Image (spheres, rainbow, N blue to C red):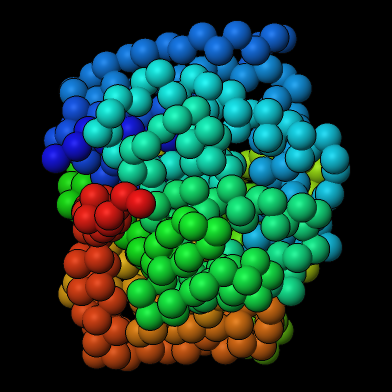
Length: 462
Ligand code: G6P
């Protein structure tokens, strides 16, 4: 088995995650794959310096080596806050209205991808398998090839790939996608994003595309594109859910809600998560069911994210305003309908909250996968499971049709789903839960890692 070199923007695992699944589970799974193969994980340290030096800091623990570098402040501004999070992120989440097309951002993105290639290349040995992650590093494969690397290089996109009609609004879109064709294997979360990518390659590049196998032939190069839906680290989550910390967190939540049903949302504070729309749905529920205000308390855990980007500051303000409004209008001296928490929490605490909350509300407007939906199910009590309300626009909905699926843009739909969840008979809850837990347990993150890396290893190098 070849050694694995993982390259992603972030390497460090935030201690208090508080939201957004991927980091913890992904780190765990990649760590175990790296451990087996004695690999390296390379990325940005999260640190900023005045001038980029390219100096790498190496750390080894449990057979895994992490290699990180600092970026210059200008890099962080143009590459991370700029092209990655003000251009690609909104565009790939179908938010063309929020997408910024600054020339300097594009230049910074190319410069930083070149810096990644320059710093990572010396760490890669012949025979290593390289696995690049996410939208920050779309052109990295090509930058590595330009340095003579002949290794197998795979890429996985954790977020959606937008429809061609939206994607072509990106200046130099063709140049960007051409760089991606230097990978051997490109993975997407769902069939839908995969199809959009294949459609683009066929229509805009004139590549030869075999839809069934995902084989793309273009200017003498062959690349394969396939769907690999990511899962959670189920065993790790179970273990965290059985800790004293998880039990205490659950108790704390339950004792504070008394006889009211706790409904929970856990999200990074990001406009793609549909948080103001969710509050509108909850508000509609209270309007339509005034006698049930005392039955329900909504807890929204939303740690702030990417605060140097204006659209993130704006969504935070909007959410604060909406939450304030509905609480002002609906609270009684002994009752507050919405609790809004900006703090992050450990996975163990989240597991306790998930289990105590009898409704999990996961309603992104667009999401590559959404692992909170899977974590919520994994943490439930099989004898008394809660109900998952899930946006049909999350990648997770493709694998979790037994959740109560909603259109997050429709307050009526969200309101109706909340009522359905509150009134759902235990038998139906169990039936849905049993189907969902099977998928969550089986299609876990270890299987995802194994599927992607074994496919990459099996592809012929052209
Ligand atoms: C999403 C992205 C990840 C990213 C994470 C947290 O899940 O797909 O690549 O690491 O959000 O965002 P941040 O900007 O803090 O890394």
